Amino acid sequence: MKAFRSITAILLLALSLAGGARAQAAAAPADAASASASGTMAKFHIRPVDDAWRASLPRNADAATQAYLDRLPADVVTRSNAYFEGGYWLQLWNFLLGLAISCLLLRRRISARVRDACLRIGRFGAVRDALYGVFFSVASFVLSLPLTVYQGFFREHQYGMATQTFVPWLVDQLVMLAAQTAAFALALAVLYAVIRRTGERWWIWGTVATMAMLVFVVMIGPVWIDPLTNTYKPVSDPVIKAAVLQMAHADEVPVDEVYEFDASRQTTRVSANVSGILGTASVRLNDNLLRTTLPEIRAVMGHELGHFVMNHIYKGLCEMTLLILVGFVFAKWALDAMLRRFGAAWGVRGAGDVAGFPLFIAVFSAFMFVTTPITNTLTRTQEIEADRFGLNLAREPHGEAEVDLKLTEYRKPDPGPIEEFVFFDHPSTRHRVHDAMQWREAMGTP
Ligand SMILES: [Zn+2]
Image (cartoon, rainbow, N blue to C red; front, side, top):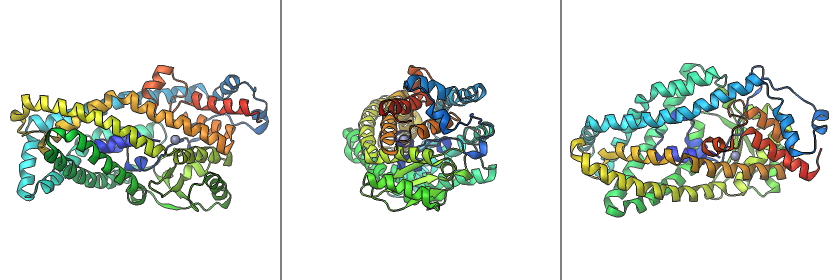
């Protein structure tokens, strides 16, 4: 589930739109057993095997895992390492760029002047704050566009995962900018109303309001946001539909339909999710996944159903509430200290002044940046749980291992333990294949 990363992003009001942190991901305990689809298999050449190869694997989980990993050619591993390790630096550059944008808006008093202009248009505080939200969303989009274009377009093409030409890609970004801007307007109107009314205790009520807004986004995401950039329709293949519904019904997931969406218009990655909150559920897989084999589809959907059955979205929201609470305590302390010193120079009149939002978002992103290993570990722990749930449900250790190999397209397959702890929001290929082979060894299946 990418919920943490995405919730964080929504919370930071989606400073980095193209970073893959779209509301869609928050909407779902989703994820991504992402992998390469048939289109890039030529570049992403893993030696194919048959059932005889699988049956002849050693029973021992360590040895069988190594046999799977040995099928990854050296150039695939090198390329994957370069892509994924480059991502570590991109996290830093995105963070620093956010700080630079905040600095620019505050030190040149742009933020204060925009607040005054918004006040002339909207007399009420909430209208002014919403208008400021529109400004901030668009300004941060424009200022970070060069990095967004590099990271989301050129780099994805360079590694062979993007399928869009520039104009359709940009149109998608603009559609998401519109959604993000609406979210900013609403969020700032609510958040600053709460901060002004609750005074010194705004960190408590700010947490409550933020969580309420997150639940709202998680609810509307699958219905209103996801269809903005992709088309959803019932899966046409009756065999796949029956296979997925069988597993869903075995665990009493309340669905009668399975949906597919056209992710191949943007990417070669495979993904799926089971979205829904407060009594609703929707099982959705992308068209790249549909091009893999049935055991792989069953393995991935067993994992996704695991997120739903184990209530990962609720647990994630609870964990996130605690993290936000601590983050807001830190933000209050940092905001008060900085405003005492620089408030007059920046034209910001206190914590309840929306002109101070660039400072708020800067200190909160600093907190989230430093706690990345914690959020990654919370998410990764759920992913490991879902993997094990999926093995028990789908009983496809080889399907799981095959998908895991494909994940190597974009995730470093064999990191050290500290690297996995700090940077991985999903377990590595070695970790996941080993879990599958451990299940196979213990259960004595072929
Ligand atoms: Zn997952």
